[in-house]
Image (cartoon, rainbow, N blue to C red; front, side, top):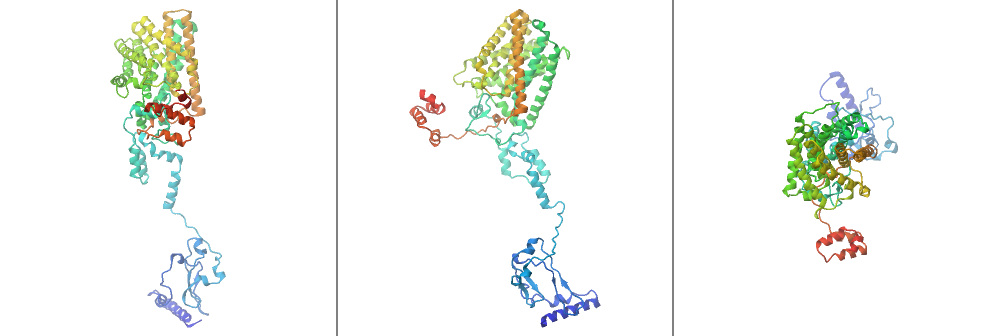
Length: 603
């Protein structure tokens, strides 16, 4: 060895002997004698990629005969990649020429090989580590239920606009979303939509289908929460079943149908089923009112859905009328006032809009479902008269008769400003039968007999019933709708009125007619019940996304239809049809674009 190596060895030995004799003392001489100035390249700046140190432990070799060897160990890298990296490394040369750090790339091939026997021990992840928490949060956020819960696109229809979710997020210690995103959700439509928007944005028999040029404010790429898909028209099921309970009670107690020997047990079973059904539908919709009040408000401003807000109260009136004798024989008079109070407030609002001549005037919003807002007056008058009341039932009978007359004339003549009802809406024509049927029975209870006034109303209902029944093709080729349940109780009402008339004019014809109409009403309700169950549990499409409540208040931008005809490669025949109306006024041009080509050619 050269002189420098001997000097280092002697100095190390002397420092060790001195430490053994003197015990703990000052800093060892090693650190005093070997300074950074004496080692070449020790204090130089080394690149980050070159800072990794070989995993081999470097031992300082002592001279021969030395009894104690002092080794210096350097920590291994934290990963195998650091030990096996092929980058250039500076290693302290102790046994070499003593020039300090040397380039490891100049070493021989065996020195480049990965040392054997090296073990890499993984450190345990501390509980509550940042990385573990981030991984858990990431996995939780990917859960579909959590993602649906955090979807802020439904906040505009929630009663509390997502405040509950934000509070839960803050309690979990998560950072809230950006203010701009929350503001965009809060700025959703809160104003009452004008009725023109419903007619412009929607189409179909019940204004439930979105037009191609419109857009909605809720996501159309996923299934909405159940309550948002639960419409007010679900109360139509209650109307159909509860009216059946009233009919079977009349079949068992009417004098004209005593020969059938119908037991009141059927009435009792149907009444309890109606009670359970009304309770289930009412509680579900009440939950919607609490959680999604904006959706309920939009249904109320819908020109057709608003009439179904009378359906819950009409169902309660039917339950009172169909009360089995085994349950109770009389009802408290105060119950009638409680049940008729909602009718009074709703009628003041809706009838006032019909008469005021505004956007919701009758000539603009008239449709057969408006009978639901009228027939409640006659059902209430029928119940009040059966309890022995006079003034209250006459009041509601008069209000109902006045507005039914106006509604009947408006719907019957179909003003030029109103469009023709689509084929899918043909079953609602049976609502024409409901009001005169119930009115005939109400007046009979008020007068005490089925007199000429009652018979006039009954004959009107009977004529409308047969005029619709003979048109078989009138009720083919349309799609099932949950709102059809509201159209079953007019048939049941006609059957009950026929029993009352048969009790006054008893003969074979009236008795046979009572049986036929009762069977027809029962079969209709049974068929609708089976169809509803099939769509609910087999097809699972009974409650699709309710597009009618999600329309935007913004009108779509007008598009150049002539440009679209050219862009989509219209035929020469279509272009010729358009040019035929090009020199006419704007209405004719628009009409030419709407009507089919074959029809436009014949113009």
